[in-house]
Image (cartoon, rainbow, N blue to C red; front, top):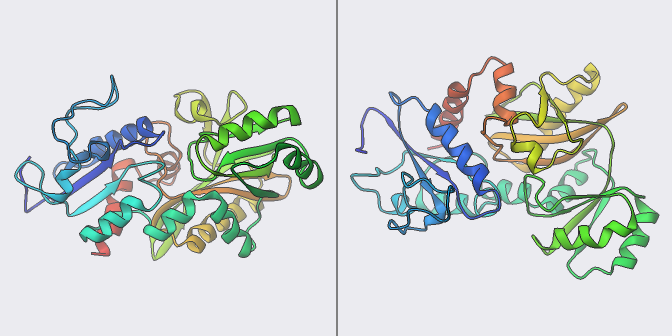
Length: 336
């Protein structure tokens, strides 16, 4: 690939080493396939290669040999030009948590999405909860726990403060990885062990039985809440399988909730985006029960896979996928 003066050089960071590697590869490929080649000189960069240009695969069926090594960012040449902008399609640790954003800040390369602080805050569910709670955002009742917590003491606190069932999830993971719905005290030890296998800090929240929705927000300086998406997993639980398996979940746009809750959810999406200092795009997951809307978490790098919610919502608003990417890239370039 040679550098073109008439096209914008876009490096799409994808893959990586987090538990969400396969999702990231799917997101990155979707972005690469949708970018207009007459406008963009785009190439994928797998951050898991860490500059080793001899690595072809990490394991079977996971890595395309066409992806560039990370050294393409540090030492651009004739094959991989210096990026004018980076599109981060990494999910989870080392992609969504502010680390790669800090690297790009040091290199002085514009990138799509939230900066270091907002990325780190949104990835950390415990810190997100503290900040949103301070600003009066409605949240499920809950509390944080640390590695080594006494199960008997934890059980007593849950019975006293929340009641079963509860949700137990690691603080710094995405895609419901490590998350459990705990229906009785007997299930608690395994759920806590699973959460702590991914992080040394976890969150325990009341389980709210209601309508699960998500609110994508896009924009830079001027924010726009996109149509609210209702999420109806066929299994009844929006887990990793339901998120990324075509046909496993019904996504309904616009969500079938009362107009008052619909408008309030969009307002909450913009508020959460603004409070955490997000940029360009975010997706805030919520649940509606009766007249109440509760915020569950904020995603700074929403998925762009065939089953992802942000592209579905944007399409409902009349923004097709290539145009969505054009907008996001333009936001990043406007900061250059």
